[in-house]
Length: 378
Ligand SMILES: Cc1ncc(COP(=O)(O)O)c(C=O)c1O
Image 1 (cartoon, protein in one colour):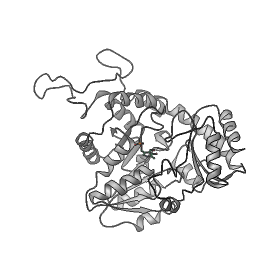
Image 2: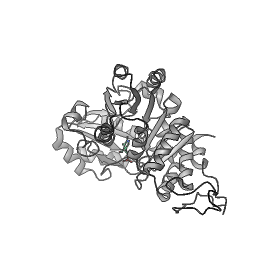
Image 3: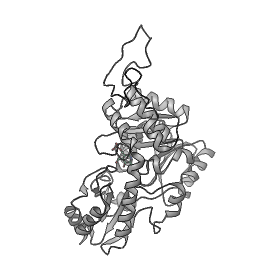
């Protein structure tokens, strides 16, 4: 079955008890047992819930993986993958990451004795240079947040396989509609389902997907043991969201490309980051690795922070808010919002300058969105 069909049907058979076409919200914490130890596969909703299971199966299928494990947030899914490591292990992370992932590495994972090295996402050789005997995992985002850099997953996967290292990819920005890291050789994919997968800015969630049974068992154990699971209602909203993922992603991309082409020529824009533009440094790699470029654009404005403040205050349709991937357009100022966990020095070192603004392009009419940007920039 093709992607669009799987998004609507996989894991979502009509309900066996009533024939309901849509997977019910099994709003229950527990399940009656016929006798001690005899049950229909569900004992307690932290361990398993049918609505959550439908979501896990559907998303695993979209990523081309065997197993999915859903979490209460993207950060919880990230932590579940990091928990494959133990004290004394070494992890190599790309040096451009969502600020919350960086905070998790620096303030939580390091405390459990895991060593972390950041490799330069612009130079894949720095990943092999960072390898140690005790390296057990490589973690990258691609496209990265917020500079939309592209990392060659296949090259990293080759390196990881040779050394028996787990390669984990945060696929939140691309979604499985545009990029499937497992098919490129990654071992685990993580998502913030808060973003494009749910698509309507109304839930917080995450998921980890793999085809490796050992990884699955370990993450599943952690999911139940640590307990950061999504409730059935939130699981259902993501499940509903992914039914339209393909349609939404096509529209996000169409709008983003149109606006990126407009912004690239605008005199108030000093620099633009959008992998769909031929001027993007890794445009060729993006074309090879992805089937589309997504709906995120970052720009550096001329005139520094003062102009950033004016720009965001004059926008009407692009709402100033954290997050991304919803049907509505958002604007974000990474230095004070998504990446505020980084000190200014760490930010600047990573290329996140004081005049950087990130746009999550929604699926409103592109002419309206262009006018909004035009007014704010004038
Ligand atoms: C790329 C990426 N990964 C993970 C996360 C964390 O997800 P959540 O906010 O759902 O915990 C985010 C959140 O912005 C993100 O942008």
